[in-house]
Image (cartoon, rainbow, N blue to C red; front, side):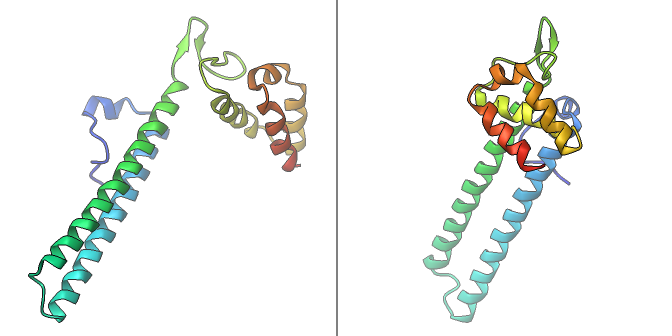
Length: 162
């Protein structure tokens, strides 16, 4: 698979962790699928215009330009989403003087509340069974202050698995 969704040098690719590399591959697969679909649409357009005798008209050129413009918009959405995902994933590898950020040992207070919600949810979703997970969360006093108003939302979510 040729990866051209984002421009990274070889050392930058080698610095990606497995999760980040999977994100890049998934985004590249989406881009490749969109590109193939756009090429298919342009090919179908060519056949239709050939069949009707106006293959060299400006109508076909205009429609192909519209298809290309939409493709570029869609690729840019995928690219920006990938960049956001990579940046978010990289937050977990940063840290402070206490070491790398990891909930609950060293929570990252630089995150917004919605991002904190995701971090705490991921932490608790690794615990099974569901009733043990909910009880552990209920006993977590750090989560109450760390999540603020999102505490109850996560409690309700975890309770829904019981």
